[in-house]
Length: 312
Ligand code: ATP
Image 1 (cartoon, helix red, strand yellow):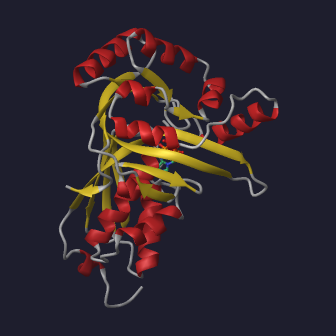
Image 2 (image 1 turned 135 degrees about the vertical axis):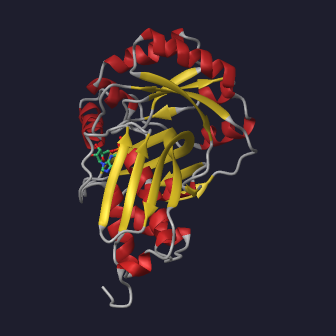
């Protein structure tokens, strides 16, 4: 820590507010388990209008408070991705990690919507502005990738192809279209590593569906701007594993189909399910039907694509 960079310096800038979206995966193909314990992924990320908000103000230490989803459940200590992201940026930029951070969480915990990664992306952007470190987004994304594979995408947003472990992100350029979704939030989360282990077990026993092919047809469907065309090509290799661990998800997907969704899919590692609607009014009707069916804790409408983490 340099003498010239005391907490007073941090007080020079005012509070910074960031809004960051959740992600869903329109396509998620999981390669075989490699000897290093990782799976190669090809995914199409899509940022939706379900947001966490992070406020960063000057402080004499690094402190995190929160409200909303996961309050009282999510540890606010050094294990929290917000604190880890702030420390990683401070170490990279060689500045002291002084900030008061407050998180307003709407993205459910361990829901397959990458809420923790979203918060880390928001923190990198917030602290970069608060501390005046002025790093380009690419460099923030590189720091983010050391903490979680979805973080580079959540800095970028939109609809994008993710490769490697998901951290190599390229935007998908399609004519601007708004897609309408209903997000069915479950009671309780699913552990992402556990879902991957279940997929490996199902594959070992020959019980997993045929792995998804490349996302080429999905990318072509995005260009057609027709929800029925998109519905036919959504796919998630983790879905069978999530349903195997949480059989009630089959009932959620069936309830969405009964309520008239064009299609439904497990989001990432679950247990959140997302349903495609034809327009905003259809999404409202679907959300009401799913909420009253009692198969999920809550159903919310959402639009996509949305921009990534942004200062508000
Ligand atoms: P992913 O699909 O990226 O694995 P997810 O949406 O299933 O994520 P998250 O809500 O991102 O799940 O969180 C996964 C775990 O990360 C949580 O159970 C929690 O232990 C840890 N975590 C650390 N910091 C955070 C945070 N700020 N918000 C949510 N979870 C966090």
